[in-house]
Length: 254
Image (cartoon, rainbow, N blue to C red; front, side, top):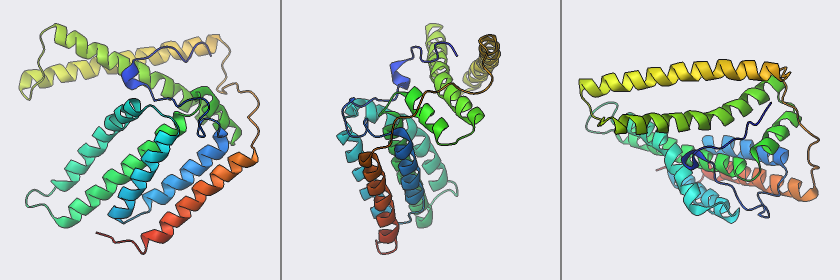
């Protein structure tokens, strides 16, 4: 499959924990299953205070995995920007005055998004991405889906770098972003150029993979053995998800 790791802009890099942290030594398959169960439990919560406590707890767990604090903050700000835009749209979707139920729903959406994003950063930042996707393959996920996810992850960063290059090129030509007709035209041209480049790159990648004998299945080695410690970590995480579900019915809903 060639060198799919490559180099990418540090602004688009998922923070990596230290190799000897408890998250890094956790076997990828049990870690993935536990993370999915926990996220499902979080998404089902309806109490804002409980979600806030859960977010703070998950943030503390991420830091205990030795994830770099600044890099973790950049990752949360990057993904949180989309969550913020969605929340603002919901809050002001009906104009002013803002209905209390809209504020409540937007708060739920924002906190659930931040918790899920933090868990995903913990999941992807505590082992090499190749090892993680190999674990997915050994979980029984169809080979085509695993390969598509791996390639999408790899080239998402290249797309980010291309976007940054486009922004620098526009700034070098004295372009100043605004809300006027000229700016909208420039945005459209930049978006169209990125779209065309993405299609061209995908065709080149497809030909390169075919030339290397790629048949749609990502080659993986033997999975790491599941230890009692891995099962204990997974059991504790699932137990935490169950506790959240139980507390949600008794915690204040406002």
